Length: 260
Picture (cartoon, rainbow, N blue to C red):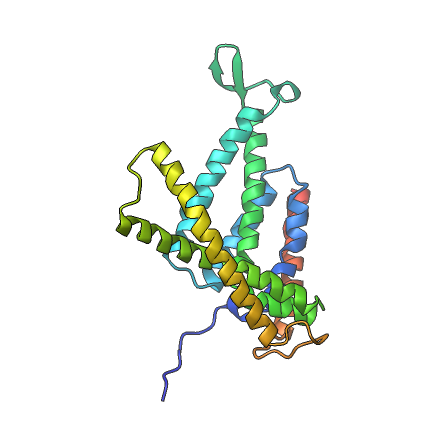
């Protein structure tokens, strides 16, 4: 007998992938047009709360949440602050003065708001990225949004070329290393090595594409208007409740900030 996992399923992993997209979608569209700081900060906090309590987080994902995104927010905020046209802003408080250049507090506020807006959109998008798998998303789109399965599975097959190419590139590099054709060190040698990888990688890609094409033909891909699925991805009541709850909470957050 095989052992079954007793670890409880987290909220986001139990949802249909379309629910994790439809729920944050209105908030993402609204964040594109916001200009304040409180709105993106509120949605960042909401996204982090859902990710920490509703998804399985490994070391890499924790690194993204607590190192990569905050670092990106600081770098983007500084960059946008320096690029902001200060002639249209308030000049009351200057934080930095270098020669004729002045960095004003209002420019930092605009840059920070822009950076936080981008980070909040990314954080909301991670609700789907961290909790859903590509095949389940394709199955759900085909089953519930009536997207032709030819389009969905062709896109999925193309997406799976990426890890295959990574593996093939690693094999080619090891083969060159064994044969002693690495070409030395330095930028010129690196360019030569990269050029040397192109032809074998292209040949490997063609072979892989031919195998995928033959496999799809053997399974009568595209011969019928619809296909049966081995694994169903149902859209349940809890998915609807998540969407409605997220929309309601988003409306509450936006209304509270506008009133305040």
